Every structure is written in structure tokens, then in C-alpha cells.
Length: 264
Image (cartoon, rainbow, N blue to C red; front, side):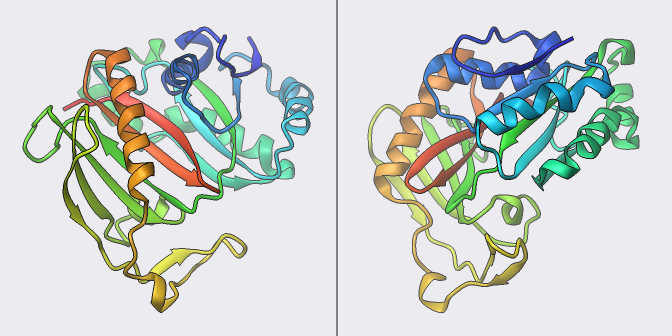
């Protein structure tokens, strides 16, 4: 049992961190920037969680957190469990234990049980660890694929980007910018700028109309696109497989939120 703060020296131990947490530990060892993260192992006593988590919360100056499930079979080379386990955003200190408990209970969700059955996974081998990450107030966010998901061309990187938090992209409420970039060089092969009429407001946490003059501008600068390309290629080299990356930019800083090998 353990509660640890992830850093570049943290071993990517799936049993303690889960699949998502182990991937984050690998990203840190590679030199990528991730949101500050606290990992809680599945066997850590519930009554002890706040005692052990809150000193790290305070040390890292968390105001709000993203609380994410990180199961031992999640985000692996063979199984992704993408979007099946629970995630809670904008979690305050007084709601922390409640959301951690709900994440731990993700294993009982019908969609998870169905996936475990379909993939012939032994439920006894699946444990749910939990990650508590500092909430990033994204100016832009999106996804990145190190092979073209439409053509399977492994010589191209595809990046999708929106203004603000990524929930609007995940939920399909906005159409992202589309960028297609050559691998190993800063050559933009295709750019399609979308119109984004709504955004998730940072203060109210509600969806509001986007300012008219900002609806048609690119969501990410070319220098940031090329920085993301470089990091994506390094991550792909580490896994020796094409990867699917979630990213965000806050105040000009690129964060890798998670990365996983692309599964079919």
C-alpha cells in the first residue's frame, strides 16, 4: 500500500500506480512535463487516505484536482479501457475522499464489467489505483496520434486542438482544428482551422459562447505544434509503438496529460 508523489525517479510499477500512472511515470523519466500527480495504490486503507494525501496536496499548492482511476490493466499495449473508468474534474479538498472512493468503485461499472468479459480478462487481476493530479486550466488542449488514424500512415503525426479544456472535444460538442505534420521535420502538410463557438469558462466551469473575434483563430501556434511533434516522437520511440497522446497548454507551457499505445 502506498501514497506517493510522482517524479522522474518513480518506477513505473503497474501494481502500485496502475496503467495510467505507470505511463505517467515513464513520461516523467523521458523529461515530459505532466501535471503534478499523487498516486494512491488500490490497497491503501480508505481511513488513511486523507492523512497521507493532504500534506502532499498542500505542499504542491493544489487548489483543484483531477481525480482519475488508474487500473492495473488500463492503457496497456493490449487493452486500453479508454474512457471506461471514472474521472472527476475540478475536485476540491473537501470532495477529495468522495471522488477517490467513487474511482475505486469504477470496477463495478457495467461498461467495465462488459469490457473485461469481452477481452477475456480475469477480474481478479484488475485493481483500481487512483491518481490525483493538479487541475490544469488549459488555454488549448487536444489529442495527438503518431500515425495517421485515417490512413495508418506512420510517417505522419495528426494533432487535433480546441480552445480551453478538452471535455468539449471528448464529448463531441466542438469540432477541433486538424493538423497533419511530417515526422522528424517541421513540415505542416495540412491545416484545417475550425470555428469554435463555445468554450468551457475557467471561472464558472460552465459552457459559454466564445468571443466572435476568437472563434476562427488557430487553437495552437506552429512552434507549439512542432514542440508537441518532437515530444510525441520521443514517446513513440520509448514505447516502440504508435501512441495516442492527450495534451494541454497552460500559460505557454505544454503538458502531456497521458499517453498510451494505440490499440485497435
